[in-house]
Every structure is written in structure tokens, then in C-alpha cells.
Length: 140
Image (cartoon, rainbow, N blue to C red; front, side):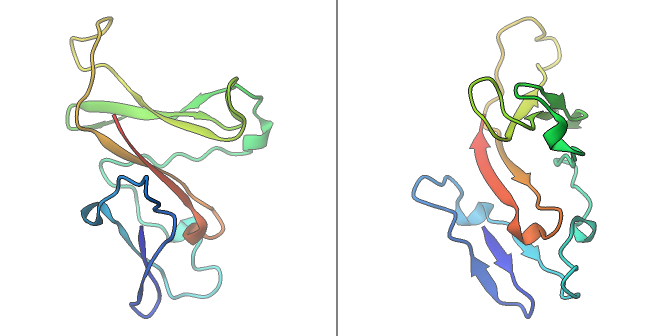
């Protein structure tokens, strides 16, 4: 991931290791506002795009392990998707778990189906300073 710092300098993060599947063409550039120390909160982020879901969970520590919450669904092209979130982890893994939840294509309910060539990025945004957010990439 590349971050544009105030003043126009580009900084490449060190979180893309040898297992990263993101190419330079997939790299996103974020404009960091130059306002004061509070200028990097979630209120300064752009609105979600047509292929993005903005989903916040208030008080995630109030959830039990293996308790899930689903985001509202969104349709992009012919693909209907949402997020399946385990705020306190699942029965097999502790900690935050976030998954893309796809709906079957029209007419394929109850049948075996798959989507091909779909890639996704899940970003958990730090509400106080989005520059400290965590991103993970995947493909379905």
C-alpha cells in the first residue's frame, strides 16, 4: 500500500511481504488531510464507492465469542455481497474475524455455485487515526 503524506511525498508501507498478492497496479493512494492532529479521523474519509461497504460496530467488546453480525448487503454489477463479522472471534479463532459474505447468483439458490475472478480488500479502520488502519487482500 502506498500512502501520500502531506506535502506530496509518497511512502510505501512495509506490510506487503513476499506473500502479498497485490501488484503495483492494485496499489491505492490515500490523500492525507493536512489539518491539525485530529484531521485523520473517520469523519475525514471519503464516502464509500459503489463497490465498498462502510460498516461500523458500536461497542464490539459487548459481543460474545462466536457471536456474529452481518452488514447490510450491497449489489455491484451482478454480485450481491456483505460482511460477516465476528467482533470477538469465532469458535476456532479469537480476535476480530471479518469475512466477505456473497449471495448466490440469481437462479442458483440451493445449488453449487461460485464466483470467479473476484478480489477484495477488507480494511479495519482506526477511528481515531485512519493512517493506522489494517488492510487484508484476498480473492474468491
